[in-house]
Length: 275
Image (cartoon, rainbow, N blue to C red; front, side):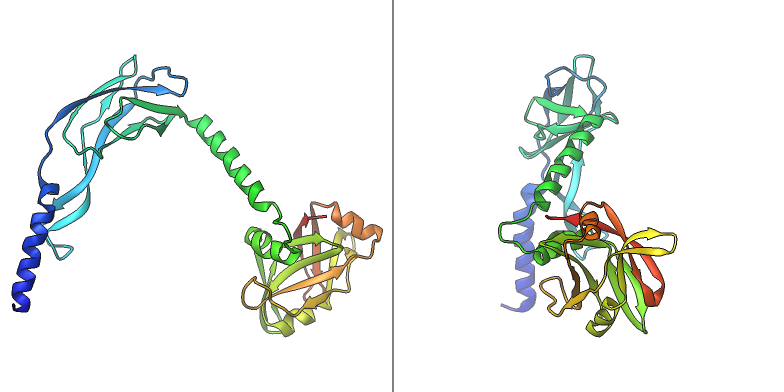
C-alpha cells in the first residue's frame, strides 16, 4: 500500500468515525425551573442550551475541513414569574444548560436533562467565594509539622512578597519585602550574587523610621550560605535576637523599615511572626 493510499484510507476512516458527531439531533422539549438555594422561583433568567461537537470548515484554515469544539446553542428563552422555562432543542445527553442574569450566578444543575437550575445572588456568591479564599489562604499559611523557618519562608512568605530591585556596586539584587520572626531570628531573602548579598548584610539596619532615619531594632546581620530550596541565587540574611526590648517590639509590629546605608535606600518590610 502506497503512502497516498494509506492517507486516503485514514481520511475515509476519520469521516466514518466523526460522521455520528456531524448528524443533527432530534429536537425535543426541555422544561424546568430556575430557583434560588431555598427553592424560591426566579423570573427573568435567560436560559440557553448548548453542546460542543464537530463542524465543517471548508476554508481549510486548520488544514482539514472538520473541526472539533464548535458550540451549538439554542435561542435564549426567559423564565416567567414562576421561574419556569421551555426550550425546544436537539442535542446529545451531554447538552448543558446555561442560566444568565446580571444579579444571579448559576451554582448547580448544569445538565439540560435536569429540570431545576439553582442560582445564588451574585453578591452572596462573591462574599462566599471571598470567605472560601480566605480559609484556603489560612490553611495554606499554617506551618507544617517540623517545618523550619527557612522552609516556611520559601513555601509561603516568598510567594507573598514583592521584589525590590537595587543596583549595588554594579550588581543587580532584589529584596523580598517580608521579614520573618522565628525561633529568636529575624530572616528575609535576597536574590543576587552571593558576594553582593554578603556585603549588603554589613550595611543593613532594620527598625522604626525616625526624624534622623531608621531607629535601629536589628543590625549585625549574617548571611546563610545555603540557597535552601528557594531557587538559584536566593540567599537568607538573618539577625539573631538577643532578647532586647527592641527585638521584642519588632516581634509585635505589623511592618517595619529596612535601610541600606551605602545606597541611602529605605523601604517597608512586612513582619511575619511565627513565635
